[in-house]
Length: 385
Image (tube, rainbow, N blue to C red; front, side, top):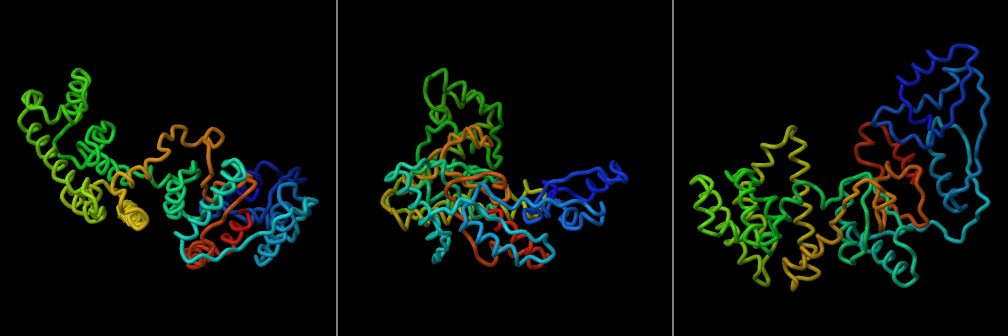
């Protein structure tokens, strides 16, 4: 992977290897996709400038991909300037061509992908692990995840955080879970003091102990006057304000036809959650990212209501909590299901069926690549995919 080395590593290598330059490197300049973290493609494209007259061996036979895939990749990458000329080929002619499918928008695209996987898996018994969806930016994952959740298709997210694992999404979904079912202890403990409202961890621990002792939920403990008398006045008032808030919103939450987005916006406003995020942000872009996450969550709610208004909050929560026991976050081997993976993290992996959504100006190639003069690297990223 010599194409992934940086200028410091090249200086080190040159210091270690004086003339007569006894050095051998292996790499592929067409797969240099880490420029954003310091990889220096000239280490391989201009290798002769560092170590004169090397013997170059081209390894052009490819054992992984079929002829149509290599043909498409070759015809794409040859548009990059300054690369080392090579043309990959394979003895495996393959039966499937590369398909290019135009969709109306990202929602229709995600839906089409989920539908294809569903058919192949349930009708043709193809394992879910055979499928990968490679995306360029983390923002693309929400609409894909929602399409898979809607069809109850197991998936794992690699190289990015699952949209539903994001802090702000978990907070708001926890609020909604408590409105739907106040006896959900996990969700309740997450939001009890988020944003901070004067219910410290010691008070929360007392409520938890009480609930275990009396064999009921933490919510029941918080509503129990006998328990509240043991809590100092300040904490007691804070708990009462919290339970009043939950009761106030539980009504609309369980009423058929309630507009979930309007209700959630009102709840967020009343709790001061956005101010809480502003305070927590170290950089302005932290807050912008969280705000974007909440707006994407609103989109998920709207999307759900358009499809299935009758199921209301319960239906929405059912969809977003699918497959949430994701313990081994990073172990790709142990996790089951369709692989949703960033293109950068997919390098070196292989799957029988791969989807590349978002092939459009602004996503891939990424809009920043035009300002920064990195369109060649975007083309290499597509080539890797």
